[in-house]
Amino acid sequence: METGADQMATTTDLSRAAAQAPLQTVEPEREGDRIIRHELSTVIARDAALKDRRITFTVDAGDIAVAGTVRTENDRQKINEIAMHINGVKSVANALRVAPD
Picture 1 (cartoon, rainbow, N blue to C red):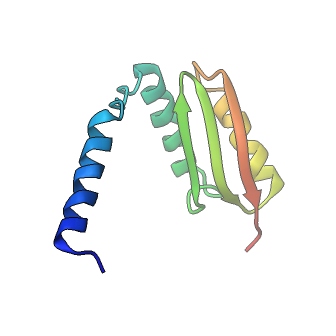
Picture 2 (cartoon, helix red, strand yellow):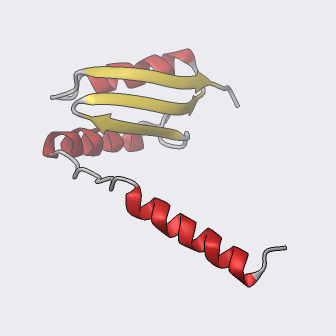
């Protein structure tokens, strides 16, 4: 059990460590990435085979990383085709798993 002095020392140590840690900044989303993300989200939401699946993706400088599950290998490949036909997409890293219901 920590005493008041021990707790204060721990708090002070954490505060000192936080003050010494470099600040991390989050860059705002690039306009092109926002457009790609919106277009891919829209296409997936309209596709009967994909819209109810747990599919997540990130877009960074035109590179897309996709994860989640789909029902068939054809659906997994469909994501690649959809993504690669969106203007501005450079690559697709597809980590989707096939898991039939």
